[in-house]
Length: 358
Image (cartoon, rainbow, N blue to C red):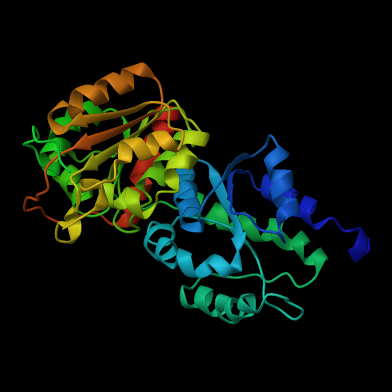
């Protein structure tokens, strides 16, 4: 077989399928357009186009928690915007994630700014201790299958030790909202937002079915959607107005990839509660409920904090994808840290997902 007759795109797709990759998220890329096109048409994959690379990593993390083998396809020019997600989500929870990255900026590159990022791509990945494999010739892509196999095998056979503007009628703060919904969500899979929300849920009702985010602000909704699309149990993503504002691209992704086992609960206190209660725009002119509707989410409910548990119960019974915006007051309570290792959090959660879907 000559280099000219070697179908790089088909080889890559077969390597992914041969290693039982089932969930693939992609960000537009001209160089990998052939691969993306084949993935989109291939029934062996669940293909979810992403608006941003870090959103895609959140989706992949959710898919992995749901028992699927994920992969992301992206450009090297976006490595810079993924550093936080790579360090505090993918690596922190030991999530196996192959990244198929086009390498722009080499000799012959016509867009000057691409060259600058090419100079730093390998150095950034090396600094994060992420192994890289650079395919210089088309036929090098034939090595992908052998590279992927130990990545997934090593992770899936490993066992870890047990670590087993506010509505005027609202008087509740976020911690009280979480306490009120704890009995409602206890029997479901929960992905909880970074910082105080996770610490409060851990304090009120720690469960193996709770996935606590210890880093990566803005991706709770993306992880929740990826999880819901990857298995059958109901998933509740608890997010905050500040986090959603940092990842607004998640709302059109949710709207266009509906999962009737998914509920996004946005606890909107009009502030960045974990960082000192600085005000957010959601507490001023911006209505996240209207933003969600404008993005195409069909079942959006805004409610005062006191009604959150009731609205959540109704949403769970409806078996329909729902976005709930719970309006509460700003304020925090003293709370301890989560005394679990991130790998343990992920491990026990995956075990719970497997048990529920077994």
